[in-house]
Image (cartoon, rainbow, N blue to C red; front, side, top):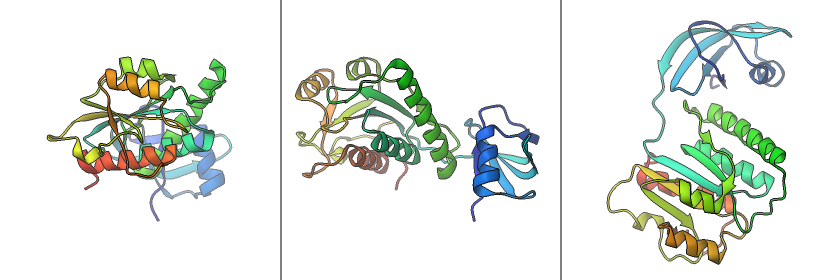
Length: 243
C-alpha cells in the first residue's frame, strides 16, 4: 500500500505539523488512519516530508515530520493548457488528468461556444473547485509542484497574453499531426483546446493570424476532454518525459 500524501499550503520543517481541516478530515473519516501510520507531506516547493501520524482528535490531527528530501519527478517541458470551459464533469476530468500528465499551468477561457452565464462570484467558486481538484490530483500522482491555476479570461485575451515557444490549438479542420511539427526540441508549449464544438471558424482565423498553429488528432471527432488528454499525452511523449 502506498503512503498517503497530503498537501499543506504553508512552510514545512522537521517536527510536529498540525494538518489543515481538509487533510485532517480525510485522515480521520475517509482513510481512518491510526496513530503510528506513515504519511507524506509536501507544500509544492519540490520537497517531500516523511512522517508519522502522532495525534488524531477533534481539535487537531498532528504528524511528526521525520525526514525531508527533494523530489525530481516534474516534466522538463513547460506545458500550459489553455482550456475553454466545458460542462462541469468534463472540465473536472480535464483538469484532473492534465495535472497527472504534468502540465505546468492551466488557464480556463471563455470562447464562442462556451455556454457560460455565471456571475463573477460563481466564476470564483469554479476556480476554488478546480484548485481542490489540482491538489487532489497532485497528491495522488506523486507530483511535488502544484500546477498553477490562472484566472478565467477570454479566448481573445489568452491569445494576446499567453506566450510559449510554440502555441498550438486543436482543430478538426487541421491537416497537421502534433509529432510532425518539431525539428528541434522545445522547452515550452501552450495548447489551446475548445469546449464542446471546438473553436468557431472566426476564432480559428484569428488564432492563425496571431501565430498559433492548428493541429489535428486523427480523422475522428473527439470530445473536448478526450482531445485535451490525448493531445497532452502526445506532447509529453514527443517533447517531455513520457518515453
